[in-house]
Image (cartoon, rainbow, N blue to C red; front, side):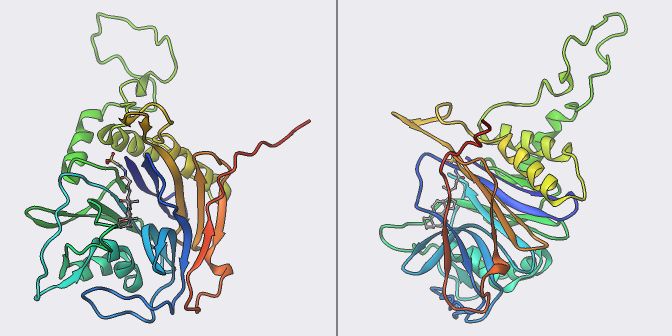
Length: 325
Ligand SMILES: C[C@H](CCC(=O)NCCS(=O)(=O)O)[C@H]1CC[C@H]2[C@@H]3[C@H](O)C[C@@H]4C[C@H](O)CC[C@]4(C)[C@H]3C[C@H](O)[C@]12C
């Protein structure tokens, strides 16, 4: 399972938890402006916006899981099994394979509004990266530094682009159903509950936190959608970058998966491999990993963004302790 959010305390932070039972050898990858982006059915793009995110690099091609560009547009792919449906080549449309989708959008669009225009003529075409690396069943969250957000889903009945008023995405079911399901939690609150039960029954409020007692705690995608949305909308906002980044990771970590509690096969457990977020105003990329909860930072502006070569950083995942005595 995965969870992606945009959090907008002052600056805007966009990123995700990546939850899975295996790691792909992903890295933090900066694609500079003059890296020659090739597409299977579309013309190459030699000059474009720079981007930073998490990616597997295969044959010198960045297969992004999630990324944000220098203009402050972010995009993440999340599993959408049983629903994602990619199409045959359509000569009337811009045919982009799902593995090219993040670069295709982030190369050219500065905002969600521009992305919507570009997506008006897209066909997510069924072309694998290679025989060994076939397509994943994904849907995508996009968000920008105005706080605006959309979800893209290519279903059996066609492509859907939904405005996302909560700026959160997890996995199944389809996005409108996730949004509708929030109705069932409208009484969940950060405050102690008022007695709406009956004036003839009295309660003694035996514990703090009773207002959020009915917040779902499961690792399933509906529970994480509700929990991440509630935690995000009740999170404190300050003017301080460090405090806001810290809060951003608290939100993502509130839906992270501990190893051992989500079994997906004999001796196989899904867990949160990494959590990441880019400050969309500044292009600074932050991440934690399952074993390294210290917040790591990669600033894309520290690199030559006019170069042509991918810049890769291994994710630091050593467990460390601050020794105090
Ligand atoms: C598995 C990842 C999504 C995580 C997630 O949503 N997990 C929930 C699992 S489930 O609902 O519980 O089944 C997705 C996100 C991005 C995907 C990768 C990117 O799309 C880039 C390439 C694309 C290639 O076609 C396949 C390998 C790949 C390297 C993908 C592997 C995998 O499917 C990734 C890493």
